[in-house]
Image (cartoon, rainbow, N blue to C red; front, side, top):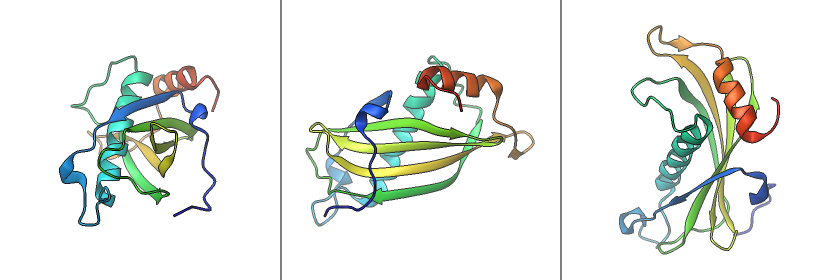
Length: 147
């Protein structure tokens, strides 16, 4: 199945992490089940946040939450595919930032594209807050550009 979605180049991403597909990730048709894609994207987000923050992430304190996810299934993924999750930040606003991710095999074929809007969040106040200057600075340094 070929897609009419405009796909980014893998060279546009400064971060990627390997993802392990498990036998129980496969559906009755022999494809990776659609719900697994979001778990793989979560892994990519976690590893990206660690990289951006130089390995210093307090996983006990939530500082951003998912407000919206759009996932496009571009090409079939099957058990045995060697998959990497590519992640980058494409926008930072006042209270939110947007991550773009792709799942791609070792031949560079993109299997899926995902855009996630993350909202900066104060768990004590239970409300959206402004994106911290520290996060903005770290992302800009990591991505090599200003937002």
